[in-house]
Image (cartoon, rainbow, N blue to C red; front, side, top):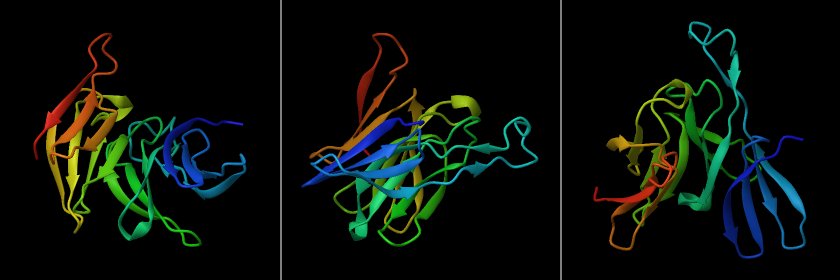
Length: 185
């Protein structure tokens, strides 16, 4: 069994857990019962890609789960090797419906919703194999994307503070250098 619990959403009487190894979203009840909510398919590596072969597909690798607009669950994807630019996305998950993908991102490690229903996400890197700078991206309620900054080094966490500023954890790969930066959009 390949299992790697990664993101957790704690709600009354249940927890939702992204399983990065199992490419799935799980529901965990207080009695320990676990049920499968959704699975996320592999992502084809285009035949014209310089990485195919040897990589014909990439794993989904779900990273975070949040409750969002429409009371749906939203799940972000990092993707796996070769971590192609544009291959990551966020799934909207509603019980008994196929998940809907909002695609075109790269290596999403975390995302959050703002009080107005818009969202922010962080991309770990911008190039294949986890290379390139990380980014903070705003997603308006109409789906419009705006890159706020690409001056981040391997960001892994994002939240919107009560002051309306966005806080990003980054530089976790630098010994003693990790930090949280405040970004005013």
